[in-house]
Image (spheres, rainbow, N blue to C red):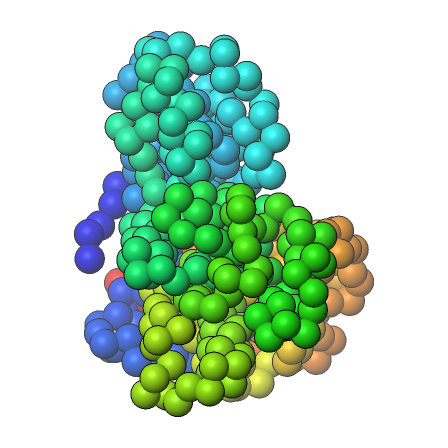
Length: 408
C-alpha cells in the first residue's frame, strides 16, 4: 500500500516500531489480539489496528503539500479536513480557512471566494451541488480533492445499483459530511433515503410492507430522502450502502433486516432475492473493519478499563467507544491533556454530547491493566502521549524510552 509524507509531529517512533513488528509477525492481518506492553505496575493492551488510515494520510499529505507549494495564496477547506481537533488546529494556524463547519453552516460566504483561491475537498468528499458551486466561481473542485477512495467506492456502488433501478438506502448519520455527500451523489441516479440506525430501518420496513401509511413518511424522514421520493413505488427494489465509518455489525443487521422484509413481502427465496434486493456487500472501509475487529479481539481479554483516543466528532472513534462500553468502563479522550491526574480525567460522553469529569478512574490495585486504541483520524503521537502520561502515575516514565529502544 502507498506510503504518505505525513508531518513528523503526528508520528510516534514507539508506535511505529510496535506496528511494524506486528505487521512482520502477521502480514495477512488475521491476528486481532492486542499487543501487551508490560511495564510492571502498569500493563497496556494496545489494539492490533488503530490510528491514521489510508484516506486520512492521503488527505493530510495533500493539504500540507498544498500549503507548502502555494505561499501567498488563500487556501480554504470546505470543512474540517478530518475529525481531529489537533490536525484541524494545525491547518488553521497555517492560515487555512474553513468555508463551513461540520454541520454545513456557512462560515465564509461563497461570494467572498475568488477564482485564484485554492479550495481543498476534505476526506469525507462533498456534494455535487457544492462541486457545481465551486465550478461556477471558477474554482476547480477536483484539483485539490482529498476524498477518500473508500468513500468514492460507496458512491460507485450506489451508482451501479441505481442504474439497475434499485432505490438506495444509506446507513449513516444524516448530518455527517460523508453521508451528505453520499446522499447527494446517489440521488442524482436513483431515489435515495438515509436511515440512522436499526430503529429507523424498522420504521422504513413498515412503510415497505404497508403497515404505516405513506402520508407519515415525510414527517418521519424529514431531510433524509430525495426529492419526489414515492413510498409506494420506490421501496419495491432496494439496496443498502453505508457511511464508511459506521458500526459494521449494525450495517449488516440493517441489510439483513431489509432483505428479510423484501423476501417476505414478495415471497422470495435466497435464490431469487436479487430480483428486489441488490447485493451491495459490505461498503465499510478496510480501516473501519480492521479497527473494530481489533477492538473485539482486545475485548476477548480482561482489563480494568479502556481508553479510546480521538476527535469527539469522529464517527469511527465513537463506534470503538461503543464497543468497549459494552464490556468495561471506557474513557473517550481527545489527548493526554484530558488526563488531569492519576485520579481525575475529562472524557467525552458522545451519547449526550457532553464532557464529563470523573474521579478515581485508575484502579487502586496494581498491576493495573488498561486497553488502549484510537480512531482512524488520530495521530499516533497522541497515543504515545497517553502511554507516557499514564506511566508517570506509576513512576515509570523511563519505561517508554526503554521499550522504544528494544523495538528497534
